[in-house]
Length: 342
Image 1 (tube, rainbow, N blue to C red):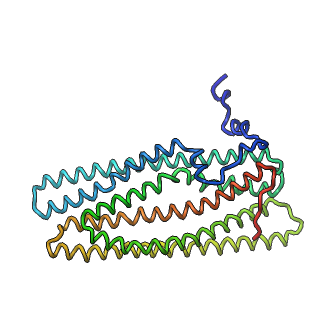
Image 2: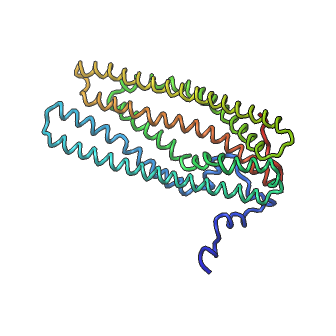
């Protein structure tokens, strides 16, 4: 007998292991328990790669500073060529490691998505309510759409915040090494984001949770036979209009938050030019230090933006995961999933 026949397809192996009566198909309430349960070893490997990536982050900044200072001091051009070659090598190594990290994250996320879809599919085959139209609607919504962001989150759940916090910490430490007062001015213009970002994120999260519930109700309505087509049509139109309103609210908060974050970033650059220019004018700092500092400010924007996106995504994904977990656990218990009204 060949290996495929012995082991069976993934769906068959999962189907054989799922028995609703034992509750083995139930999902944990905490999404991070689900992450560790599905990819614990892979998360350790991702963390190792992540630490290596953010430790290299400040090397190009120091090389930039030295290149500019060597040019200003009219040193041998051979030294500049050597520093530029080193810069190119570091950037290539850094980019290659990030490529490996991102591909590995994607694989871990897609693997979790596949396994979660198989789990739901097999559970619904065993569940006593699987033939009901309501369960069919939730099944379509969960398997096709709702598990996608959950699986994607698994790949970046730990490595993403570790990477962005590591980059922020290393760059801020380097900027403080260059000049503490310039670093303090940049931090002062950074702090307002700690106020308006969480407020806007909470508004986005509330709308996202409502959106998922309304879409689930729309999915159920599509597969549920109704004698009164007019009544169903009005209800579906109300759901669609509600989704439109929720989406527009999400867009407004999201892009306003991006605008304010970009404004704070540019104000940091203005402060660095003013303070750094004064230091250069009074011979308190070399021009290479100002160039490296401004480059560091630019490097703060991307990891902070990615970190903001991560916390928004984790909050949104937790809402979606709780909805999926509730539906799956209800089905495992032989109950129909809850359906939201428009």
